[in-house]
Length: 198
Image 1 (tube, rainbow, N blue to C red):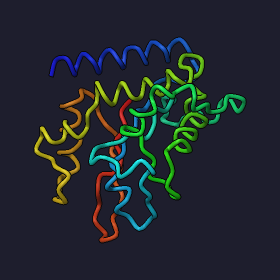
Image 2: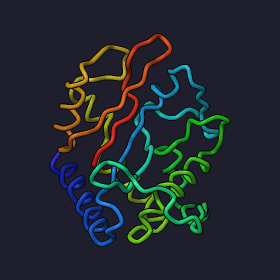
Image 3: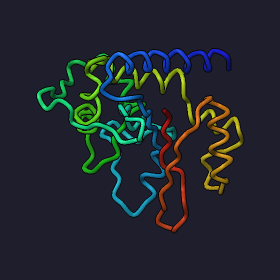
């Protein structure tokens, strides 16, 4: 547990230093989404061509953000997405950062969207490879939401859990206060869909 807390602290310190150096934004939001909740709504959901994602939170994005919680977007239209720059990360990204958008794809369109909309706003401190590597590192070494929730007895089992108990479990397990987003499934029940950390 100490290693995890130190890992989180180190990753966030690095991001904080990078943010302070850039001055283009104030901090990063790290967003993770639960694939089951996204696919269990009335909206369409398509699994990636690589197969059904694991029953685990996937990365939605790493978003440079202002103190008022708004964020810059599409900061450098001349900086396109180049998949070859992240070829060494592709296997990890397919596991940790899958797209559930239709039509089914290999997730490259989703990664391109995240880079163009959010990543280009962090270019003063993170190049394309660094942007995706930073998000993967946080997910893999710092904030394992599924493990945090399961340790608190909160399982992805269809049972109802109090929102405050979810929030407190994440805060206790990660050391940070999350922003929790819920959606409504086809049966009209609220379900956890996304959690972001600053």
